[in-house]
Image (tube, rainbow, N blue to C red; front, side, top):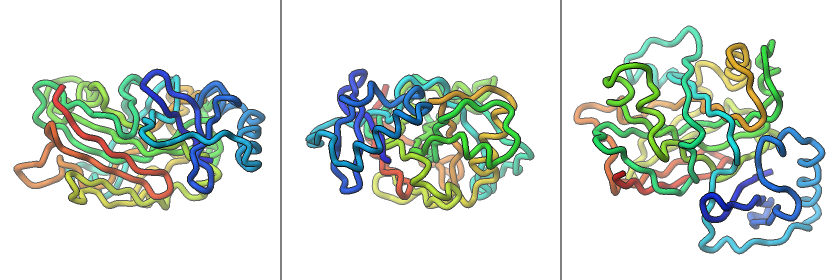
Length: 285
């Protein structure tokens, strides 16, 4: 299933995109798309049955904003340097273990919402990423297969980053990762049954129409199941938590000087095959 949330920011309603590409209203069936729903197999079954029967009301998609596909996100865990080609382009050593950092849940916005270039920024960068949404409580998982079994679905994430804040302003990466609007998510949460192999997903990103990133999740150093297993040994993962699993080569940081960092007015488009497409216009904060 392709689950999503539509409407004005803070007042989104749950919806479903059916197999024919028609937008259907879920608000009469579920309260929202959140961790509680993802952990409720019976509730998801009712949604799937209603979708298969064609019983859900049609929504007029014209002019309707698409919000983040997940409400009440508990935490956003991020994996850095998780693609062989990205590590090579930045001159970094291949990590022996996953590099883990966090984004605050309030950085998450809709897939086509405006993204703000922070005040004083000179190195705002792009990163297309596969986001993993947790559907079952995970702690001390024993195998990568266990990790995959705890995944409810997948989505497109844009891990916007400010590199000067990240690397040159002291401390850890958090300053460059948690600026307002720095995590567009969606358009859809695609349930795991529709993604048989998360290690075979093409990812692409364009800036002002120019292709910048053209990669595949096959390049991940630590695959999805292993990432979930690994993280579960350092923190408990709950339904509705999100893991951004890293970005392939092609970010501004890896380009020759002068590096083409983002400015207000730039347009970034990104997609993952089968998971949908985002488009953001950047503006100055």
